[in-house]
Image (cartoon, rainbow, N blue to C red):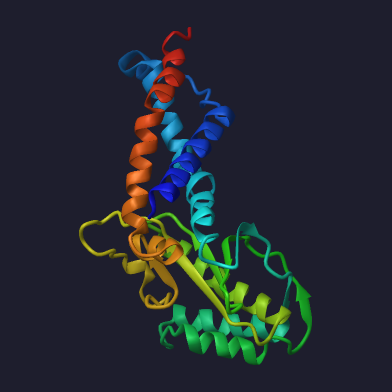
Length: 259
């Protein structure tokens, strides 16, 4: 990552954090024992971290990813509504795929699944649907679509199944809009909680095509921004934290003196 781009990403992170500070209101639950043991400022920081964890995708990862992707992709945007129609036969095919994967009587294969949906993408009735928004929507110079869903890094089985269904529904909707579209739908885990060991989550196996439907940590960030982006991104986060430290300290200091 060139130094100028690294500065841009660092400033983006700082802007995101300052926006979070402006909009954040600590939980109002009274915790008298915790307050006396740890102090209100530390409890406010703890509450802030929990809130930040909940919104990190929208508040930090998505705007940073888009800032990186705009240098490499023709179009890059967040929180995009997919096409709002799916054919009745495509919906039926999605259920067939999901039932087969749940019962483990079919092998997960992203390319096969896309072509099965493509064959019926406009057959039957085009029903109106309300689908999950696409977290990160990219289009490359060849017109191929790449639709990403960002997830927490340790999803349970139910979350993985719901995400798989979402990826198939995005595919069906965009093929209903344009049957010849080249579309890739991908689940993203922005970091690997098991580092330095490989990412290992049994809940993904058999439900997601691990070679074509999942990007984790370095693989995602380097795909978005080019080789070396992940390492430089960590440096940008560290530098942003150093430069924000006095602001963070003063923000939480005020809670110490609250009655």
